[in-house]
Image 1 (cartoon, helix red, strand yellow):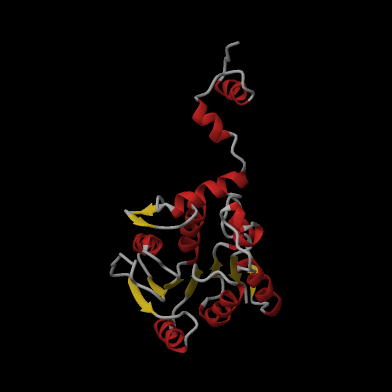
Image 2: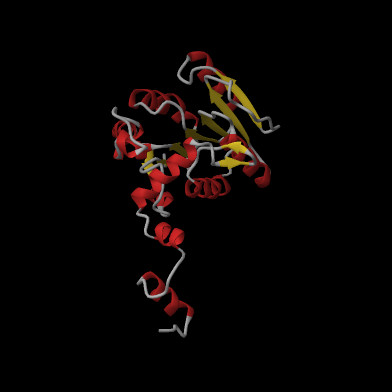
Amino acid sequence: MLASHPLEFLSLTFRGLVPLHKEYRTRLRMTLFDWIGFHEKLMKKGQCRWMGVRADKNPLDAWIYQEILFEVRPEVVIEIGSYQGGSTLFLAHLLELIGDGFVISVDIDRSEYKVRHPRIIEVTGESSSSGVISRVADLCRGRRGLVIHDADHLKEQVLKDLANYAPLVGVGSYFIVEDSVEDLLTPFEDVGQFHDGPLAAIEEFLKENRQFEVDVDRERYILSNNPRGFLKRTK
């Protein structure tokens, strides 16, 4: 049976009436759950990169980041946890395209960090130490901030960082808590962990802080690593 229209061909394809290459049939049948595990394996192998530098990000979330940066126009982006710096460079390049702002990269360890850019300032140390918090606050003073958290994902540490860095977020801007998907899965499913993580921290933070709300529209591409993690400051 032949299809007379492209949409009809597509329909026949998904119904199995038109043969597809085996590899693509497997991909098209992958569930959202399967895809999260598949992408996690890619990241662990270092196969997710920005301009050649490892960037452990869900590309659909990265697209949302550029939308947020363009809309909010933050004067400073605080990235807590940078690893090799691929995502740091990505953020710096976006700000360069927009024409304003810089990135503060906060990380306890620079042994794997690989990037340099005039819009990146490095602050090295434990994110909840008084010295690091004071240094970041000085750099942000008088500036509209946005925070992205991708450091230690244990609930207690995420809560500390939410409390310490939330005041730097401007009204209308965001505190993005990454990898809350870990709380929805188990370690046996490639992504999860045994302990409470970012999602548990988010829920506790929101109970005590009415200045922030979850912006679920930022999860509209469904495959987000940050469920309930796009926290918009509204007050």
